Image (cartoon, rainbow, N blue to C red; front, side, top):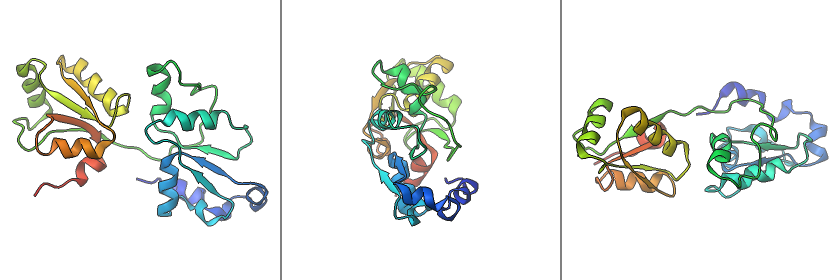
Length: 201
């Protein structure tokens, strides 16, 4: 989902050309690379623009690089919720999400959902909570990785519902969904778009 109001604001012709000709504008994060590739972020029209992909699984690497960049307006870091949660999950984050960054605008919003395979007896959130309670902690839930917002959503759900589940972290949402569909895992917390894109035969 792209904020089209923001898209209009970021069109290349609205950026002072002398700023772009002076030196590159560096956009740090894999999200930026994808937006530029698709054309949703119109900075691609400017030859001086450069998008840097940092380790996708280690967003803190990109955050550290952006935090250590000169505060001159030539580095744009596109962050996810990981920027805010990582300092509380890791003692070596290497940045302060408040002191080291200045927020500009919100680019996107995502909806998190809990999904189960078709073979699951649960057809509502209440039925799933009751099913998990009956299983006595034997239910598994997947996420795209430890410390992701989906993982934290699962932990919050456990606390609110008063249930126990075993977290199964994956390296991304795709592999998790591939195990969810045939029922190798019992549930998954995921962003709505990748969860809805998988179709069963």
